[in-house]
Length: 450
Length: 60
Image (cartoon, rainbow over all chains, first blue to last red; front, side):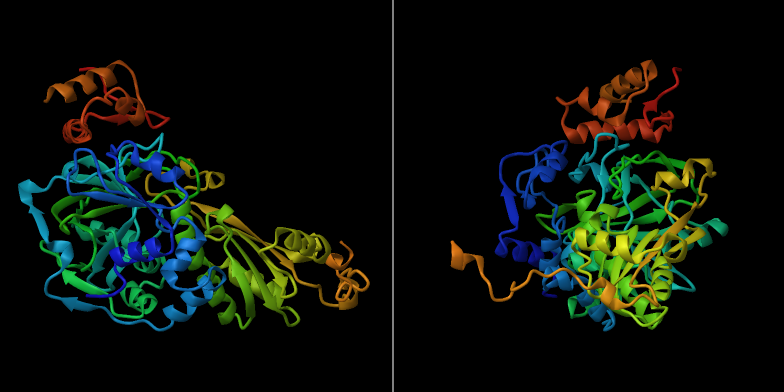
């Protein structure tokens, strides 16, 4: 069995002093509020009405816990992600798996037997928020992504398939033929697998091999019981079934989005479940919004930014996707600049997914220090020369400023993007940026006079 | 239809409610029983949504 399973990660958090265990009985309606207040990841050991189940949450809702998952320091996460993702390892198929220790098929399928949490005040129902969703297309092969599921009936959920994604593409192709799309949802996998699943890889890139690269070992997969798909063998819970060929017609949401906004009702397909499998004494993973989602998004966005800069032949020094922009909508980077590369870097970073705000600085700026960043923008930027605006680029529905409510069901919004080149302008002598330094600061020490 | 599903149906025929309002009115009910009753209403496809995402059922 692989070393980097969900349970081994819980052990790692425990060893790092980052896991709290709650043993008192907790109702599913209390889980989210309790998990949000804890300053550690939390394991609920005693779920009222659900003997044998446990619930884990907030496992990577800080950069520190994400660093535990990555096995590196906090400021190396993006670079580790980039390096490891360049060394993919293909998955292997195993014959038996912990995730299939208990099997419910046909009439026995009952989502209410799982401790589904009610997470946020305005949610349209209980949600399964932390998913590793597998689908397959006859031409493009397997794909993995992260999609939320809203409880509808013991055998059905809604699924948010509004935004552009590979699964949406696969679903549209199946829908065009009037066919359902078989999918499998794994819950309770290692955060590295979640990172791979959320990576905006080209459609023919294997997220499973990426997960292997991040783990440093092949991801072990097992065949599903009722659909022609494979899922991570060490998952805690698996839902097998199909997306019904009904298009974007079923109400889904609101859900507390990773944008920190409650969101609104969306129109989405329905996921009908044929089979539920899980481990003995299973742990349900409740991905805590927004921070856990945002910290999972950040390294993916940062690594995509690094890749875009390298393709543009620009040398990155540091990069961050601020958690205030949900690790998704903004990128700030410092570069070792040659003439003209400030603009090249801006253009490259604005090409990343739905990133809509970019700042690029020279490598003398600490981009993690907001005062340094403000200083660079104040003194290295001329708005008529250093601001770049792109119109009509791809957007996400959950950004209210794109006015997606004006679109029809299944419609896709667009957005404008802003980039700021805050590098020293060409033609301005660098000596004009010489920073104040107190005379004698290196040899005269305050403690000698106290 | 179960008595609990009938009770929820009656409430939503009277006024639109957010999901959490429905939950708040049934905190004494085991969560699994509540979800099963909610599922009954979904299965007969009578739950509609208003502009603010609240659930409502047209009186029959």
